[in-house]
Image (cartoon, rainbow, N blue to C red; front, side):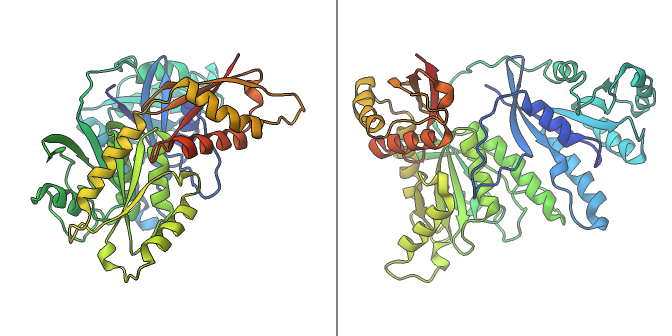
Length: 435
């Protein structure tokens, strides 16, 4: 499936985030509010009329200080425009046309991109007359909508997705595709260079020097492995938020294209909020994941260091404690090829199938020992379990009251599947059906 990226741009307070939530809210995404994991809603998967796309809201990264504010908004609009397939340009009917709207429109006209102009906050027929002045932007016919009440958002989405293909499987490339992702300056380019044994990337210690990602082919014991190398940042930016925003869009695109995400974290900094957000983005898209702790050569070590570090990491990962961890140094090339071995193992795990009889025997016993309880006191009976899909693995549980099975019990079942059948590095999906 070729994956489409739609970017919402516009000045602050025109209702981009409201529109973002309105579009994403149409899709029943499973969102777990898990302590310790920040779900940043600047990026999300959306679907309209059988067409899937990624939606990016540029409003989430507004810098604190006034003087960089305009530069950052301009720069982020620029980044989003460069990366997106369709730009959804949001303006505000209540304030009317402002100079900053015209400035964004100028940028948009110069790019050969499909732009859908939406005039937000038009919540009734009477206000339709306010559309007139927005023709001055020279971006074609404006669409009226109210993100808040949902008025005409269907027409808008029809226009946005007009050229998108309906979800379908495209020709499958049998090669293993690895995405090397992580925060800017964590050593992604150095790691890729170490694998390829050649300087394909300009490596400096200034965050933001990687150019556009070029897929590299790694020949590994006669096998071709595709490295979907995510760029850190290809333009020099003084604005921290823009670097982060660009890096995040890049990461998103690479996750979409990979089989296994190799997430690099910095041994000298440990796991932080930004790392968790990247892990969250990968698992939310049902990608298999492994963590490579880079710069391990800079850590003072004794016999217990790696074990203690891993234990601390697992505690921070919480619901993601199924992700395997490996300690590497891209600089000294220590264990860089072990990452490939581990990625191959993780890929084998996500393609694994467990027989129905095994599932019912083994998990059936766990369910008997600890049956699901419902708040209403109704008896819940799980009668039958089967694996319906691999990559990612999906397990169907047939029961009398599927809606009554709570999150804690689902977590219990996921843990039991991992305990018996490993699935290391692989997000497991459960589906509960009426029997």
